[in-house]
Image 1 (cartoon, rainbow, N blue to C red):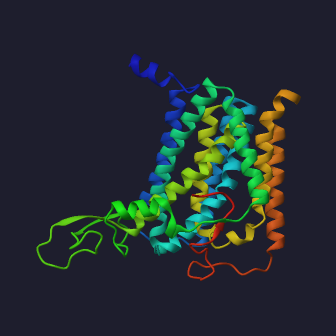
Image 2 (cartoon, one colour; image 1 turned 180 degrees about the horizontal axis):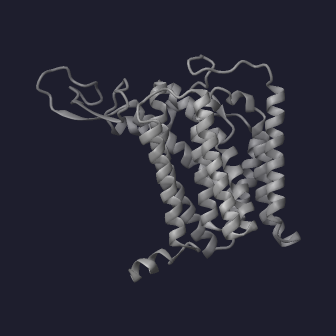
Image 3 (tube, helix red, strand yellow; image 1 turned 60 degrees about the horizontal axis):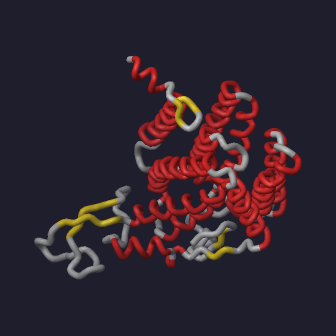
Length: 355
């Protein structure tokens, strides 16, 4: 018993272990309730349900932020809210690319939530690894923050002046690698990521129709879609994770704000995918946010540390301005439906770089 007490109170990345375990337990409970109760059966999620589910996740994220404010102090609370807002907005590009991926692989609407759900598990692991590495670098080498700042400023400038980035899914390196290394079915097999089918007659061919062929594992298009979604999140995390580290060096704040923001946005996908075109000018606001956050690091030596409330106010003001301008400029444009040919095509563009 004494060992258990010592364990839960042991320091882990600057916070007691019980704090991390409580957070991960809460996230696991939310995901289990989501898939095991709310979406036990595969079905298409409508806009209304998407908005309600997302509002629930956002409310939980903000409630957690209020608890951080109460338990860790006002500065930590403001840093959490700033990180939550930045990650939530930066992840808008994820929604755009996820829509392209689902369209490219013709993932049926009733299975899209399952792909996004399992994608969340990968995000939780990958973000933990990236943030852990980032925290170690910042702790051991203080100059790493200046590298993060330079990345943010460069990304922001690129988004401002070099906005158009072609993203051809068919020519994506990861997809080509997976198709070379795995047996992949042409059509989906329900909600399954892997199926057992007869071995092909020739390497790279379809499943054999000859009797007596041994059964082997085949990946389905749902697995390829899941792999690409994880890859996209990993690429986009290259600037979103440094953005939060530029606000706070506390790994707990960085990680929890990231995860809560992503949880809510994945839930919002089904409503947002149909109206992503309405946020066309938000990318300019995002670019200015990245430049501001990155520049803060270099300004500390000149004017001192910028208060957390100033960072939150500037970030909120820029993002709110981007949303208002976007909605006004695109007023009257028709909504996009998932069956519409105007959905983002495999050759569509995103505001951040993808390989």
